[in-house]
Every structure is written in structure tokens, then in C-alpha cells.
Amino acid sequence: METTKWWQKGIVYQIYPRSFQDSNDDGIGDLKGIISRLDYVKELGVDIIWLSPVYASPNDDNGYDISDYYQINPEYGTMEDMDLLIQEAKKRGLKIIMDLVINHTSDEHPWFIASKHKDSKYRDYYIWQKEPNNWTSFFGGSAWDKIDDEYYLHLFSKKQPDLNWHNPDVMKEIQDIMHFWLKKGIHGFRCDVINIIYKSSLANGKKKMVLVGKEHYHSQEGCHNILKTLRKDVMDHYDAFTVGETVLVSVDQANDLIHPDRRELDMVFSFEHMETDQISNKWFRTKFNPNKWMRVISKWQTGAYWNANYMENHDQTRSVSRFGDDTKYHKQSAKMLATINLTLRGTPYIFEGQEIGMTNGDFQSMDDLKDVESHRINEIAKKLHFPKKLRWKMMMRSSRDHARTPMQWNSTGGFTKGVPWLKINANTKTINVENNIDDPESILNFYKRLIQFRKDHHVLVDGMFKPLYMRNNIFIYKRFNESDEILIISNMSRNYKKMPIQIFGKILISNVNRNDFIDGILKPYETIVIQGGISK
Ligand code: TEU
Ligand code: CA
Image (cartoon, rainbow, N blue to C red; front, side, top):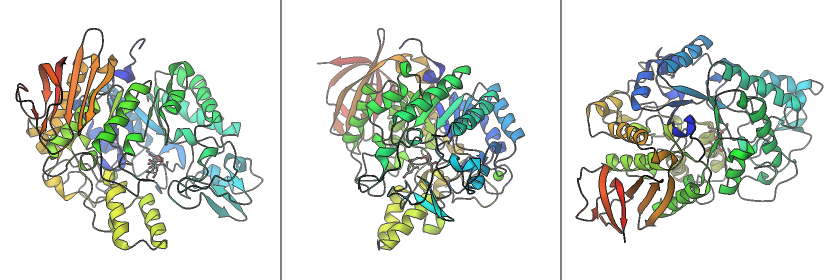
């Protein structure tokens, strides 16, 4: 690596504004709420905040359906609040990146409203056809809906019409939007589903189980060209970075987006490690297999130019419930995942609540779920005569709302004094920020130590990654550069295990208080970071 960039050294904390902190007790998180919690975020030790969408939106998909890119959603506050948030963050040395959702807008965006008129110049901002093709939407069912006598394309909900990136006016509009926010002092964008924005053709897709039509819009040359333009004309004028959310990419496809010589994006979120526990799609899951997971991670670590390392986000279920054990070994497994998250090569992302080991939601019925995707899939499954019990099982295993339950600040919630928009998990009684702060052995304090540890050990930023052992639910790898070597050993199971290789050195961090490993036994979900090496 030439010189390390601030966004390679930095650690990102993702805030889902709707669920972080409510300041006026209407049950919805807001910007003033976030401002009131900036000290908490700062104390965690992170450097960058990724703010999920706060733009004006009818909230069909919680802000990923934007009706005005230049306005703040009134539920979240005003532009003055946003300016204040940027300013208050800056005071604390925190940089903010925002979501850039440019595959689609809301159907309530003035462009789309005008686009309904065939002779409007906005008609061509979207993708209209006399007849739909056979493409399917990410949220299930056809990707087309009809208005008057023509159909428009929407790869997500029908309230999220796709923009037409063949139209130069669309490019111009988006550039203006990016300049507007960057000038306000934000430091980059998380680019929503960025690798599918360019549709090369609207021909029928080859018949497949999921995502029919994908070959016409996934990782197209046209997309690379758009990214190069945005980089050159916009991003290069600011001290800012981009992280792309790239669905269904291989390591090679990712490198085509992030290699510095190509001047497109700076890093991407890959999905492969999030797909190791699924069959054909996220609604049909298998038992979590740690060995498969660690091998996928290792492949990306050694193959991708620079990784955006994450265990969970607003679209995924909670990592401690999914990859760990959220009952008996709650603390141990949350700390183990934290250790992996923060010692891999790449920029680490922490999702709000992950740092206290928040678990999946305790929903009782479909009425408790709010996500547009969950409801749509439930409807489709109902039509296919899936029994109610099976449908509920699918939801409990995969609904995005598991990640979106309000932040657990204290034993009664602390998120709002009103009625929260999404049910607060009853386990806030025991899993909350307040009691984490008080307990030196808490998950939160472990995160703080790890974050500081990463800052103190540059090898964790610039060092190479080498896998040493990935079997029997044990993950061992090293990070090394010319002057330093650190080993990370994790037992990803609830069983005691014999240490599979001989190691020596000094224990720097461990989640199970121990001073040496002479016994050679790894405890359930034990994770150890060692300065030293292996002996053969
Ligand atoms: O997600 C894109 C995406 O493909 C999935 O992660 C999606 O959330 C879903 O799980 C598909 O089954 C991004 C955003 O992160 C998500 O919140 C939005 O709903 C989506 O784009 C549309 O903007
Ligand atoms: Ca509020």
C-alpha cells in the first residue's frame, strides 16, 4: 500500500436514524437525537459515521425511496439540524458519510410525477415500456408496474422506480446532488446497489429461480463508465471516499470497481459471507457453517484490493444471533465476532447496537414487522400456499426488521418516551448501553479496547492477511508487516477445542481472561489476539 488513507485507518459506525434516538417522543429517531448521542459515538473510538438516508421520503423503504435529495425528512428534523449535526460531529473529530441512492428514486419524487406524462422531458429519466419484460424484483414478483398504458421498471418496491442512466440529464442531476452534500462538509457516500444502476438492455432474462434479468444490469461496462465520471467530475474535488454496496459480486468484479488505478470506488461491501447460511436466496436458510464462512472471508481478504468488513447492517439479521450464540454464550460470541471484525484487513464497519451485542427482535406476528420487503415476501409466499408457520419461520430467520429495532440505551429502552415505530426488544432489560458502560467486562468495553488496540497497532491497518487454520470451527489467521506479526485465534463453536497448532507469544487481548495458553484448550467462543508467531 502506497500511503494509508484516513478512510483505511478509520473505523465506521453505521447509524440507522429511524432507530437510534428519538428526541421529541413521536417514536421515531431523529437528527437531534443523533446529536445528543454524539459523545457516546465518539467515546466508542470510531472515526466516521455512516448515516442511512435522512432525505425527504414517503418511507416506503425507510428512506431508500427519496422524494427530494435536497431536503431532510421532516420526521428526522430540518436542514438546520443536519448542518448542526455535521458541525457537532466535526467538533468531535468525526466525519460523516451519507447514503447515495441513485439506482432509483421514490415514485413521489417530482421527476417521477412529471415522468408520468409522455411528452415531459422527465419521461426519459425513468424506464418505461409498452410491455414488461420477465425481470423480477429484489423484493419478489415482477419488476414492472403499470401506470396508464405503459409499464415502468422497479428493481425494488413499486414505489422505487429505477432511473434511466442512459440519459445524460440524470447524470447531471446526480452530480449536482453530490456536490451539494459534499460542499456541506460530508466526507463521502455509501452508494446503494451501485453495481446494478446501468441497464445494458431490456431483453428478457434467462429463466432462473431468483433475479431474472440480472445479466442485463449486473456489473455492466456502462456502470464502470458512470463511476469513472462521478469520480473525476465530483469525488476528486473533495477529501472524501465512496463505499459501494455491491450485490452478488465476485472478488474479480469487486476489484474492477475498487482497484485504485481504475479510479471508480474506494471499497465495496461484498455479500458472499452473508450468503453462506442460505440456499438459493435469503428466505431459505441452512444452519450456519463457520468453516464455510471463514473460508469465504479469507478468500476476500487475500483477493480483494481493500475490504469493507462488516458483520451486520440494517438489511441483515443481528450477527450475534446469526453467527454466534445469543443466549448461553452471548458475551463471548459477540466479543469473538468483534475481534474478527476489527482485526481483518480493510475498513471495519460497526452497526448501531452491535457494540452491545443487540440480538434479533422478539416479534410475535406480522403486525410487529414494518419492513416493505418482509410484507411483500409474506404476501407472495401466501399466494404460493406456504403454511403460515413456515412463513413466520422465514421472517424470524431473515426479516430485515431484526436489525432495525430501536437502540437499547437503558433497561426500559431509553429510545423514546412515546410509542416506538418498531417494537423495542424486551431484552433491553439486560442488554443495554447503560449497564454495558458500568461493567468493565461488557461487550461495549471490549469493543472500546479493541478499537484502541487497532489504533495502537498499525499492522492491523497496513499488514497483510494470511489464513493459518480454517477447520473444525477454528479460525486462525495472522496480520503481518515487516516489523510486526499478530495472530488472531477464534473458536467459533460452543465446544471446548484443542489448539490445533503450536503458538508462542504474548496474549494482547482475549475474551476469557487468561494469561497464557499452556493448557492448549480453547474455551467456547474464545478469541485470543497474540503478538508472536507459530512454531511448527
Ligand atoms: O439493499 C440492497 C439489497 O439488495 C439487499 O441487501 C436488500 O436489502 C434485500 O435484503 C434484498 O433481499 C439496499 C439497501 O441497503 C436496502 O435497505 C434497500 O431496501 C435497497 O438497497 C433498495 O434501495
Ligand atoms: Ca422523533
